[in-house]
Amino acid sequence: MTATTTVEMPVNLMEWVRENRDQLKPPVGNKYLYDGNDFFVMVIGGPNARNDFHKTNSEEYFYQVKGDIVVRIQEDGVIKDVPVREGETFFIPGNVPHAPTRPPGTIGVVVERRRPPGETEHQQFYCDNCGRLVYDKEFDCKDIVEHFAQSMEEFWADPELSTCKNCGERVPKPTPVKRIIFEPEVVIERE
Ligand SMILES: [Fe+2]
Image 1: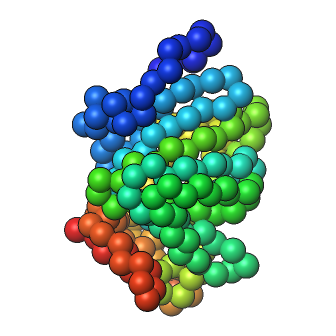
Image 2: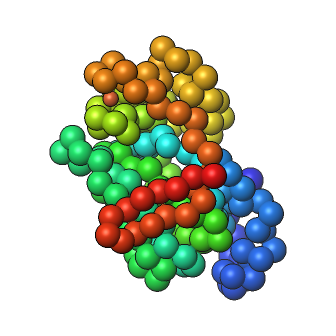
């Protein structure tokens, strides 16, 4: 993708989604809308199929255009499920591990800062059973596009890496999100 450095005409977002829908596919379902020097804007369509958490010094902004999602965040040693409903806006400060779960048919916009040189990002996995950190891999930000997906696959495939040292539960390779039940508590159902 070439950087967005000249003025482009405004785009109707839902028309853009219709035209690019087939490219918003699991595991992540994202496509760049703008790729600037200071920040980039992605459109992300559900379902996604990931259970990794992402931690970076940079902030992230979410606007949920269509359908309801859950962003799992890790705060004070506990994983919290934060529903982000259609029409809602959400801000993730730096250094908060987060893992969006997106049901089919949902559309969201995410804005992220272009990482400064030397900044690193973490890919983490937490135990669903006891909440402990199971795996933490640090990347240089310039390598992340290439190596992030590959690293997830290596983690899921390796019983040693993906088994919780605390309770022995394994972090499985996730299938796509089928639906999310929001009330009375969040339940994420997968295919
Ligand atoms: Fe565990």
